[in-house]
Image 1 (cartoon, rainbow, N blue to C red):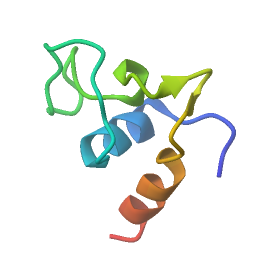
Image 2: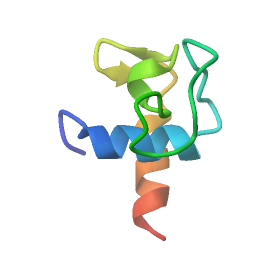
Image 3: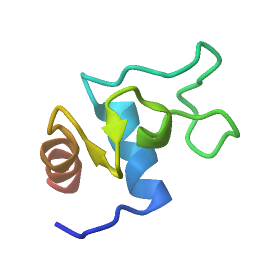
Length: 65
């Protein structure tokens, strides 16, 4: 996988991730919205990576569709 994820990838992964845990309660599922789901606003996203190792598997499963 790439070293850095694009904003679009981070939004798509968050929408499809079973481990997504939002950092605030005003996050919406609409991709592209100002407060849309993204790895950036997930409790598990630390130091530009998923601390529960779900980013790559979720991204790969999206790419397979």
